[in-house]
Image 1 (cartoon, helix red, strand yellow):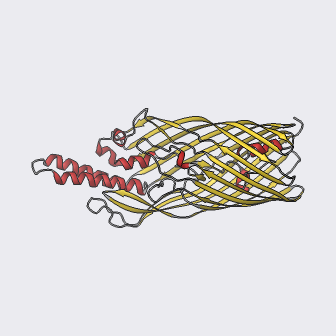
Image 2: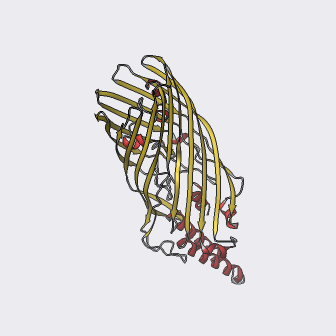
Image 3: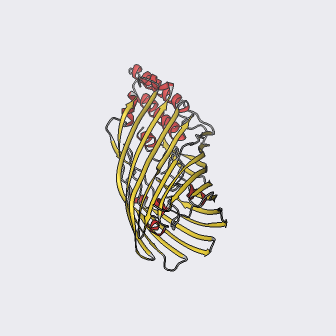
Length: 450
């Protein structure tokens, strides 16, 4: 049952709609969906997240940007083992469970105030998680591990002597109840980590700037498992649930260098955000058996990230760029109440183009590939962590000199992977899959005379 509790509790990224560092989110603006190569951004206020030092190269004035993303997703896990845990009352053939919860509210906001050689920047968004997951038939992990516990109870019953008939019947009834719960339970998870950062950038020379800022993140988690069988196991109701939250402050630093007028080089480092969660509002008598108790603490960090970028103003109206992000997952403590993950470092690379094809509009296109640090025994059936290839595109429209309206979309192709679950003393293969399409609308206003 320990592995079951670990799998359930380890949901800090359970509602993540796009991430390339297991936890770290990258879809932090409408501009990112338009072109995911953002690490040399030095014209728009979204630089306040992707290239903080680039804000010092922006034109003078106050910039305010706000946007919202609409996320259409399907997460799935499939198991084709047949007669799973045949020594128990549980039999599963061609198990498949999925989540198709649409995220309608996924906001972001940025501001930059630039004056002479310095700038002040700020950002707000969803730094991890992002919404809710609803599995009406549970997941392969919870199904298998309820079944594993049922097998354990039956094994204990068989070892009892004949005179212990009442205890044997009790264990057999518990096994039957768990086998029923394995195939008849619902799982709801909500995980959102809001974040914001505030800092300053200074242009030391005409072509070199440095920036530093502070980042604040606040994470919230809620989990609920529901089954009518829980009452038969002395739970005191049909649900097991808990809430948890945590927060921390970390730093972000950047350098932007323009060796010649048409070339941009940028380096940014986001330090690890070490988020300590505290569990509260636990419901269900069985929760303590799974290690879920009030005031228990655990860490789920946002790993440090190194962001590199190179850009070239190839033509007066055409900007080409490439970006590389490296996530230090190995050095992050991504613990649960009972255990920890074992992810290796991950990375992503992107290329893109921004083309201003007329005075009042521009078009963007970008491609990105992300490589995760997963292993076949370290993943999540709630939010599959998968390698991906993404295509982002969109348009900017300038109805006035001060206003920019952006419409964009990003399609992510995820590559299915196998994840092995342990239950009843054996290992079983689950195929994880994911489909995500993001659409976004954003507006930027520039006050040039402030």
